[in-house]
Image 1 (tube, rainbow, N blue to C red):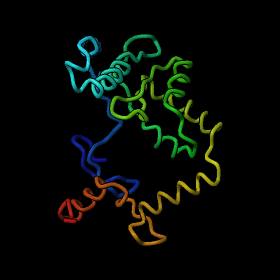
Image 2 (image 1 turned 135 degrees about the vertical axis):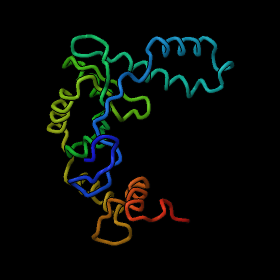
Image 3 (image 1 turned 180 degrees about the horizontal axis):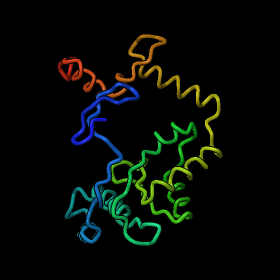
Image 4 (image 1 turned 45 degrees about the vertical axis):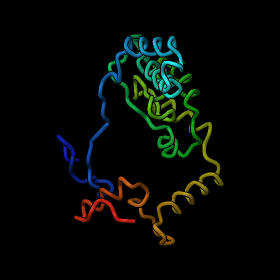
Length: 192
């Protein structure tokens, strides 16, 4: 990687590195503030806050993240976000339900909660103890042959760019496409 402020070339795929990781930012929010905001919003009700149906789930998710404890029982200073779909694809297993993984981790003494921005991304207090639990899930719930073939087929169709038999990973996401175009000195967007 490039180090410092990002940049550089990935030694695995040759892609342009914009940010390194893992990246811990500390606490997502002030737990007392989130609790007070949630209590005030629920007390006032939807008549006072038209955005309450959107605000409540966000505040509850932030409160759950703030409540995650370390193995020793103290508040977690920072949490590592783990996207479960990507982890399960890497392990070639069925997607572990986030609530199931949270309960399994709690049984191992590891605090975890779904992220406020994505319920299929988990924030855990001790990332080193999450992977062994995921590996155990993978042993018990591997993708069946048909599921694995179907998943690979969907990924190939999505990323083939119209050329059968050729996979273009930079065509999978708009962000990757923009990075590739920037590296090649082309405009970031192409008119439709």
